[in-house]
Image (cartoon, rainbow, N blue to C red; front, side, top):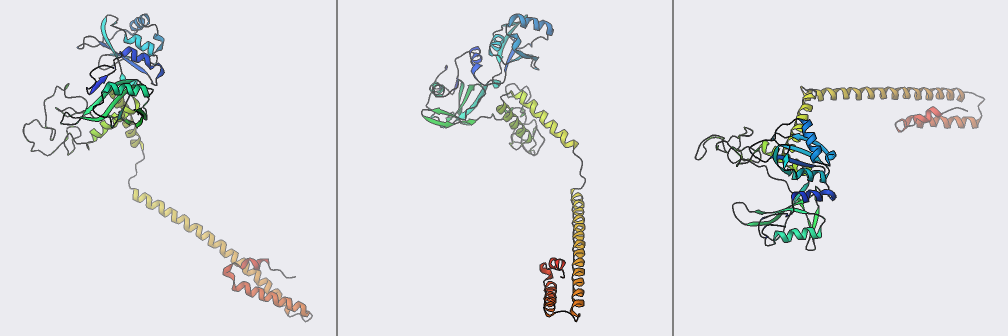
Length: 376
């Protein structure tokens, strides 16, 4: 490790090439190498792709591992590979065809960041880095302390950047198992024009009022108006839809280990797809009328079913009554027969009582007994 042990920031003393070579046993998705013009005021020239291919084949013996090459909007060339050796060979270039170049790697794709708390502010960062690497399977790239707002007082949380995209759920420090916290940046806002797409140092616009967006000095007398969304709040409000959107983009960047530009592009694509889906949904002019119509159809279906069941019950009742009346008349005919024996008369009397009992218990389900009656 390098730098002063008691500073609030410390970077690993290993070179970029050495760190990339150590990715072989770490988890990552891809390595993106950026090649820039050594003259920061100039962009990389747009060269014939066939000539670029010939140069790469000559200069990089692992060129088969290159997955993609593209020119960025910032005038740089980006190479994508999964092979650490190929990436190191690209990083070692000092000249790209006839242009003097500088190289770097996109760290978001090959590193992870998290917070640990309750670290004594007197603990040197070098000692902390050595402890993390000794007790845990990770390689520390950077350590950063935080300073309390509007003061020079250092606070206990430490931001740790490690090689590889695996975020540790916990780490062991001095025999203590401590849980880590995922780290998401706050939206960066320019303090001159108050937009979220660049910082104050790179802004070439004039200062404006954060409250109303106007160009004036002194206390603002105008009603608040956001310069980002035109809402009735000042440009620093955290309830601003643009601020909330930027926060979601930064969360996407952190969770997927991608650059802010890539996260913004993915977020905008998802938003566009959602808006297109909403457009294609069928229009419902009046939800209340639609619900009322569906409820009326439901009631009609219930009434029709009820009437059908009532008709079935009436048919069953008529059938049971006919059966009992037939049995009753047969019993009457037999009861007036003079040749009927006493035992037979006693049996007929029992059947009369059975029919009477059936009629009196009709509501209890006696109709089934009437249908089963027979005369011997």
